[in-house]
Image (cartoon, rainbow, N blue to C red; front, top):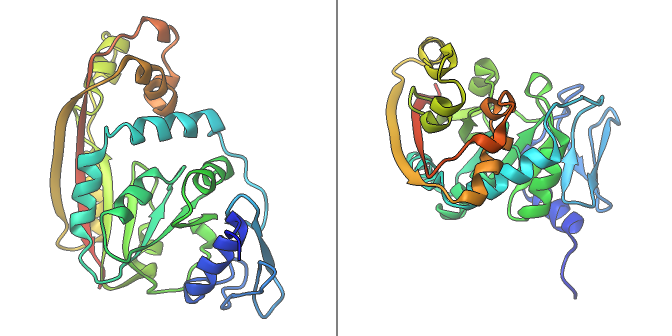
Length: 279
């Protein structure tokens, strides 16, 4: 038998984890046909794409995120810039054979690299941006990739051992519904020195030179009792060819008019890791 296509592999992976999936329209349990059609008892159906992902949106959504952004993000993450962040996240996932949901997964690089550090982990990535999920299906075949909206979640309650939320908007009530008892929400938010070298060059005379995450942290703590906060901070050399890609992938870079004037030899990563426990 020949190698499975990306579509066939995705069908197989979803079948192995079909218990995770609920219809985003009516919330009934989903089933997967041999032909790659996921459907519920009310005949709402969704097809696995040949690129290796499934679109679980029941109406199209316009996203401001482009293919170029996700390609740039992939290049920067694959360079190892965020290795220490991924290691810190992986170390917090202690469940045996964990099932992990990455919310706002983009092109999937963080989730893939975290799953590689764990034994027998199942990774599921969801993003409302179809371009990101298409890129994830292109780059990585070990995880399940879903175009979807957490406001109409395509997953059953108490399905995940860990939920990742890396530099993305959050839906804490939905996170709590999706977590297994004793599971963890792991949220990454910027600290004041994140990309400080870029901020200092681009916005030297602006309030954008400073940043605080206090409101985000406070809201997380309101949602999760006994929140633990861990600081992750380090400075890394930055190759010249990655500067333009860093500008492409970060919202800060979108507001810089003369990108060619930005010269960076190193860059600072500075995050808070917020850890919330399921009930």
